Structure formats: structure tokens, C-alpha cells
Figure: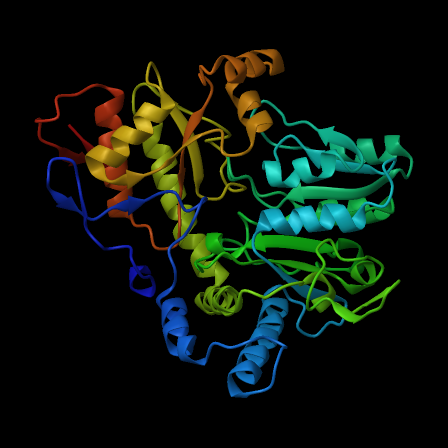
Length: 440
């Protein structure tokens, strides 16, 4: 099925260096996605009603406050929590901010231990490093984690691990982690679980309840700009009981019930964690995009993206000089995130050529997941350190990350030009199709 009509801005031609115009291909959805048309329409329809949230009296303020609060119900329902009274939604500006907030309000003691993995994005690692004692579960040679290793660390810590924080899906290999199995382990050893859902929310259905209480997710964070909504919004979906016990990370207007010369009374959750003027358009866009994803159906989303992912991976295997990372044979636990290099080609140069010659947007570098990328590249910590200090930046990859609107024709164009660059073919030679991949 072609989902392109659901999106804005994906068919706008751009000018290449030679003066020709071409429809760009965005294979960088792991960074930022285009908006749903319904989202841009929602903004257009509501811009004339913009007013203060939970401040002042008047039609615009009341209207925006109602929509702002209604969005929480949409988000809770999206994560299977609509009929529960266990969780609430705290609005943030990004997944990164969400994880920083959680690190600062949930870790009470520097002796507390936090378990995470070497697969994580920096946002799910760095905020915790300075606040407690870190325990890392390493990855295997293909970049996967083994949940048995998680349990071993929980047993070894003898109750000192208070938080298990883990990615829902890797932004480097697309591996989807068994979050409910990990939640069950965390709860067995009296820890809470945080799921970094940034790369997962737009691609897989998430019921935070799981199949039983032990499998439930305590906290989940995500960014809307990776789920087809712009304007810099994100959220924490978290348990009320823990949020009620914590003081806010940010303070100012909107988070207090009373301020006195020597004391403060905080307001109730979730407003306690939402100091300052809120991002009204970001919030309503986020809720609309999640509602659209739910209506499209994750079975449909999964089928489309899985078919495209496997098509690209299987055809890349036959391109000489291309090296891919992660498991390319057993891909059922991978989203449409494909990292690769070309022998004797600099990763940044390769991505630049794809962009400037064919308007194919990719990501080049270490994807804010340096320890993970170094492991997949076989670089030691000392080699990686020298690479950064010297400024050589030898270690890196190119990433293609797929979205619902991407098509097989775009995949063919990508594979075609990748093969051309990888094998230094004459750019004037004609192409022909063969067995699903464009060949010379």
C-alpha cells in the first residue's frame, strides 16, 4: 500500500548542483520524520485560537487548555493505558529531556545502581552516569543483548540496582528489545524499568500493561519528531506513585500551588513537572500523529516496513564492497534501520555523494551511540579515544532508516546509486532491472 498521500513535504522537488530538479528520498527517518497532513491541517485550523494554557480567563485560553489536557488521554490510550489510573503523561520537549528529568527525579542516592546496555543512545546513558553507579550489559558480536545477562547483573547486585533503563529499539541496528520480558526481570529484583521509546513508537504497537502486572512498563519516553509530528515535543508516560514522591526537576511558573517566604507547595502531577509556558502546538500535533498511527494499524505499518527493510537488506548483500552491520540473515527483530559502509570509501563522503548526486538523505557518523558503533566496527576503547582526540574520525557508518511512506521505487534508486558508488562505475552507463534490483 502507498501511504505517501498521508504526508506533507515529501514530494517537493529540490535542485541538485547541476541545476536539475529531483524529488528527494528521505532515508533518515531515525533522525526526523515528515509530518502527517492531518498534523499540518490541525495546526492551520487552530493557529487562530492560540492562547494561554491554564492561565487567564477567556475563550482562547479555555480552548487551548482543554485541547492540551485532552491530548493526555489520547497518549494514554495509545499506550494501552486509557482505562487505567496508574500512569500519567508529562509533556517535555524531547526524548532527551524526558530521560534527563527521570534520571534527576528517580535517583535518590549516589550509591543507587542503574543498569543499562552498550546498545543505548547517549540520551539513555549520559544523564544517569553522574547520578548513580552504572552497570552495563554488553552486546554480542552481532550487536544484540542477551536478557540472561541482564538477570545475571540483577542477581549480582543483590537489590542495589534501582533502575533498569533500556532502549525499545536501537537507532543503529534497529533491534527491538523484549521490553516486557526485561520489565518482568526488573520487577522480580525490585527495580523499576524505563524504556527509551524514541525509535519504537512509530513502528510497533506498545501496550505498557503487558500481559500481567509484572510485565508492565513503569516509564516510557519518546519524541514526537520521530513519529510524524514537528514542533519539538516529547513526553514521559510514567507511574503516578513515583512521580508523586518526587520534586520537579524544573521549577518556575505553573508547577506550584503556593510559594511562601520560606516554603513551597508544589502542584499535583503532571503539572508539577511542566514548569513554564507549554508547547501547545507540539502537544496537539503529537497526539494527532499518534492517533493517525493507531488508525493506520501497526499490523499494516509492520508489514509495509518489514517488506521494504528485507528487500533492501537482501539486495545490499549482492552489492560488491558493501559491508552491513548487525544480523542480516535473521531480521525479524529488526526495524527498518540499516547501517553499512563501503570498502575504501569514507562514510561521510559516501553519504554526501548520495545526497548531492541523487538527493538521497542518509545519516553518517556514530548516531549518538558511540560505544555501540565502536563495538560493531571492532574498535577498542583506546583506538576510539585516539580517533576522537586526533580528529581523524576514521570510525563511523552510514545509516538508512525507513518510514511508513518510503517505497520500493525509492529503495531501487538507493540501491542503484549505492552500487554505482561502491563499484566506481561510469556514471554515463545505462541501467537495467534484474531480479528486483537495478543493475548495470
